[in-house]
Structure formats: structure tokens, C-alpha cells
Image: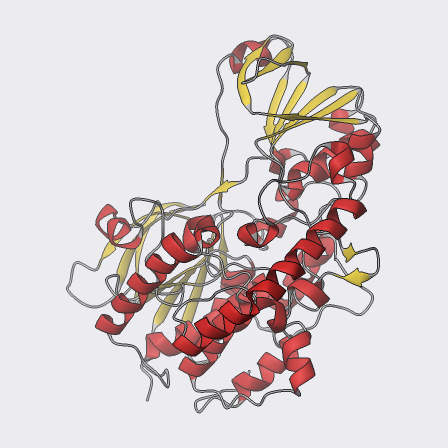
Length: 495
């Protein structure tokens, strides 16, 4: 019999809702702490820039038990995702569990010697402390803005200039008639540059460190990219972790064919997006850089660079002047507005330093078994830190794994020594065999979605029935299929 726990879920975004649903339907008392005034995380309306939409198709960006509405487009807008998450919360009675405007300021092990944690909270009513038996950290990789400071910003702003983070670009009207420079080369950076052109900016520049491979929504203008990059057959072309001798031999034999596959894809993308003409063809081999940071190509971006509506400059900001941004290469960009599309900072500032030292290596790599728990931090786990192209599905399956781990109900419940050995193996693999996997502190499943899911489901003890060989190897992950796998778990409980 499982002991009922008082569980704290920190964050009411995609992963927090998944964790709350998983713990709640297995009988635990759940409280969701959310520092903003609305649920949704990155999809909370005040954090979304104009024209934002998912990078993943809607059938991949969903929970196992709830498809997105049929009338949604293939790549839903930010407003549609927020509506979907709101409906999911209502379906499972989660909204009433959310304490909005509640920020976790610090936490410590319980002073009475019992299991669990005591949290210091900043609430709308003031400071308070509260104890919980288990903590699910669901703040993800996009919690705190990464806002770099450069010399001269005060003078630039005093002269009428504006500096803002990409998440603060919420109204295209703010750039009309202005000279805009965007720092960064992520999808949000190129989205904002295109939006600024369309909104009537006087001039638009984008500053980037190096060209990166981007994936169009339809490769060759015909094939949805999920049919190429989200399939098990393509995943097998990457050398995974913990490979057997036979797997290593098979990969060595197939190496020439794998090499030809990637070169063909590079050639196709170069032609389709006119990368040589724009001067934006990456030097890095595409297979060496595929991870969670690979962006989707913003429609219209390369065409605007080619015809001069967007000026692309390599480098970064060195300093501001009263009416300009000066780059490290000496270029001077006259500007009224700088948009910092510089991403987000991962971290758990409320976790005591002694535990952060056990969690995060000196090079920023996280020590997490299955990207979910650390054996040296009791009564705590992470949901949604296993980021990927299938973010919602990863959070959903990860939450199902975590609640069983917390209850001691995994079919393959790992011991501390086993977890530490696995963590060391994964750290070595990321550092020496697959450096691209070190992105986001190693908290990136892509492109190993199937391998990651296989491990989680095996731990849970599902009786996984394989689809036919063609579907298994050439179809993207199917949320309905994973819902079916979870229903075969020995301790499955219906919602």
C-alpha cells in the first residue's frame, strides 16, 4: 500500500501540470506553486512574442491522454497551446491546486528529522514556510531570462533607446518606424527579425555568433520534417550510450551510408534555404550538432536576408553608444531598439548550495539518473528537465516514472549505487562520445527520443507491444501508443 504524501510541484507549465496529474491520480495531496499569475510556463500569454508557435507538430506536442483540437494547425500558435494547457488543467482538476503568485525563495531538509523539505515561500499574503514530503521541480530550462549586460547601455537608453529581452517583445507596434537590432540566432531571434520587418521597422539587423543548421517545416518543400528527424530509423544513425559490442559493429558497418545520408540532407537544405547565397551555410556537419537547440527555419527569414530587408552580421555586442550598437568586429549598427534573443538560464536557485553542488558538475552538466532524479538528493525529482523535440510527451512519461520512483513502485527500482554508476557513464558519454549532448547541461533527449522512452517504460514495467516494423522504424512517436503502453504497467491506475 502506498503512503499518501504531501507533494509540492514547483511550476505550472507543461511539466508541472503533468507532474500534478501523475501524483494526484495516485492519491497524493498535491500543491502547485506558480510564481506568475497564470499557468502555462513559456506559453503564459505575457511571455509570448507575436507569431510564436510550436517547433513541434501538434501530434507530438501533446499529453498522452489529450490530443490537441482537430481544428488546430499542424504547428499551433502560442495562444492555442495556452488554451490547450488550460483545458488540460480543467480536465484533471488542476487549476484549483495552483497557488498563483507564489515564489519558492529557499528550501531545506526538515528540522524534525523526518523525510521531506521545508520551503520558504513568498506569497501574495507575505512570507511563510511550509513542509512537504516530496518535491517535484518543474521549472525547466526556460525559467529565468538570460539578459547579458554590455557597456554603454545606460547612455543608449537615456538617449531614447530601448533594450528588451525577446520575451518582452509582445506587440509588433513597438518596432514600427524604428531601427531594430536582434542579438541571437535561435528561432525566437529569427521570428522577431521577420516580425519586425513585417511590422514596418525602419531597419532590421540580426547579430549571430555562427551559422547553424535549421530545419524547415517541410524538407524539400514536400516532406514534413517529423517524417525524417523524429523517427527511430534516423535515431539509430547516431551512436547512443551504453552500446553493446554488436551495436558498435553495426554502426561501423553502416557508417558510409550514414555519412551519405547526412551529406544529402545538407545539400538539400543548402539549396532549399539558399544558404550559400546568404552566406549562412554552417561549417559544422549537421549530424554533429543535432540536439534540442536545432531551430526550425522561420518562414521568410532567408528570403529577407537575401533581398536585404534583414542585415545579418556575424559577431556579438561589444558596447552601446547613444544611437548605435558596436559589434566585436568594429561594425557600427545605428539602432533605436536592441532585442536580446539570448535565451534563458537554467538553475535551481532555491535549492541549498550543498545539494546544488551534488547536482551540477563544474562544467554545468547535471547529475540526474534518467534525467529525473539524483540519488544524493532525497525526496526530490525533476519533471520536464528531459527536454526534447517531444517536450510534452517527455514530461508526461517522465512524471509517470517519477511518481512510481517516489512510491518505490518501479518494476526496476534502482539502487543508489546503480544510479551513480549510470550517471557517471552518461557524463562520460556526453563529454567524450557525443559533445552535442552537453547542451542545456546535458538535459536534452534529442535525438534519442525512442531510446529514452524505452528506458523509462522498461523501468515502469510496461508490456510494450511493438507496432509493425515499418511503423516502428519510420513513424514518429505516437502519444496514443505511449498511453497504451502505460496502461499495461502492473500498477496502472486510470484517471
